[in-house]
Figure (cartoon, rainbow, N blue to C red):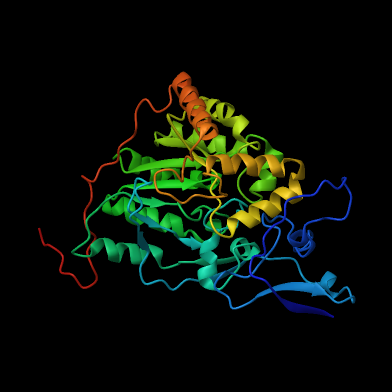
Length: 387
């Protein structure tokens, strides 16, 4: 019979040994990781308890092999009964002060996702729970309209997709993002969208109309052109070819598009920077950006586990380069440097990106959204003007 045993909170991950391939794993965290068949199609290797929980628990087989009977992780969706939908921030590193997240958790399962630690606030794991236990805000369009109608509201670009992806698979059924776009179009409110899903092309009808009024721009993240690496690292996101095709369709519809080479991971995908930019430019993209890999809180150990399981020969090199760009640490949250890093390696990545953009004619102009079309929606119970 399987049982649960208390464990240390987030035990340190040891450095790999020099044991030959096929030898018993020297990594205790891999030994207690969730079985591969149970987490098939997922990004994280484990499901450690959130950092706010009183104790961590791991599955332990006491010899009866009953762990083999546990079902695979299935996506479940619960309702998020938020009373407000616009989130505010004061970070100087990003070009917006407000955002909307239609969903909490993300089924794309990107192992490097810096939003994973937010699931700990819900008493869930930033690991497999983050990509399998999702929360939807079905009332988001109505809540947004109510907030835009408030007398004290002052319009400014809203960013969507900066935490979890608004076009993750469940959006096909729930269509919360489309409802939000309908509200933004009706009120003439500007919006910037970030996604790694080709599902964004479903809403080209709305996005094209908004683009004609300078109300929208869309950024797609292309992490790698290698379909095998992309599928391993981002198991349920659109393939690289579909993302490039989405960029082409958006560009042809007159919608300002940006390709994001994000995240750049040294010794894993940094060699693809120029090829990704070239492919995006040929798809009609006019703007580009990049972000260096970030490993806050639980993401560090989740990424380590993933590297050890999938690219054990690169583990040492990847983390050595990461520390060189993070002041000797696995992550540095300092404003002003957390997105790009510091040191010679970070400088070289930045120069390569700039040179490639210059050769391809990217970033010659930056699309600017306008506030001129904004009209407050009529609030509930508010008397409408007769003329």
